[in-house]
Amino acid sequence: MNPIRNSVKAIIIKNDEILLIKLKNSEGIFYLLPGGGQEPEETFIETLKRECKEELGGTAEITIKDLLLIREYIGKNHEFAEYDMDVHQIEFMFECEINKDYIPTMGNIPDNMQLGTEWLKISELKNHKIYPSVLKDIIPKLHTDKKTKIYLGDVN
Image (cartoon, rainbow, N blue to C red):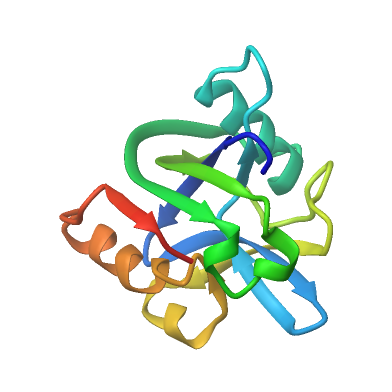
């Protein structure tokens, strides 16, 4: 088993849309929150700013606000166990704002399989493959009244 990995994610909502990373694998298109793994001696804030620059592109300037959600991902417990058997990751999801003039684009250092970034309507999240899939139910709640539990557990 690999060491437990910290990851930080940005929940960027503007109007009635959320900004997501668009990716494609052998099973088709899917979406993730922007963000990624913490490096040694890096704070969560530094990690999230770096990862958003890499994935959202050079014009992206984010303002990090409150911690909204914490998720554990223990790979052997989920549908991608054959790929993620040794993965144990803790994700910290922060409410963020992005500069008003940001236009979705490919990041400077995109993730493998990344096609770009895209604003998706919150009301249409259920029509898309999003990981973790629990976000399809939680994001609309956060958008309306922000009343939800913080710790999500080992979910995908």
